[in-house]
Image (cartoon, rainbow, N blue to C red; front, side, top):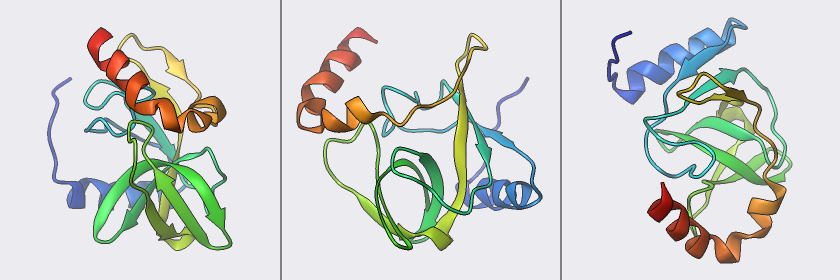
Length: 140
């Protein structure tokens, strides 16, 4: 299968349309903001349409003119606070209306399908993430 790099605006407009039809979309995310659970450019993710999200869900949102695939770390009515698992600081806030879809599976290059958990322990280890991620990056 050939890999093609498509600008985010075009790709995610199409992904949004596919999810609104009730179908699934599979994409290969880029970047390291979701390490160690999603490896940019390596793993693929399966997205499904969701109207709401809970703390611990990995979601795709459009906010501030850009698309973000991060984990929900807090909810407050119709507002979501997001943070990448590979980030040591920095959060994004958005509305549930910005929600495009939710990651239901991570597909490793080996073909193994993993259902993402809520990452409770990883979220609790936020003060130590800097050190854990440094070790992870040196090993992998």
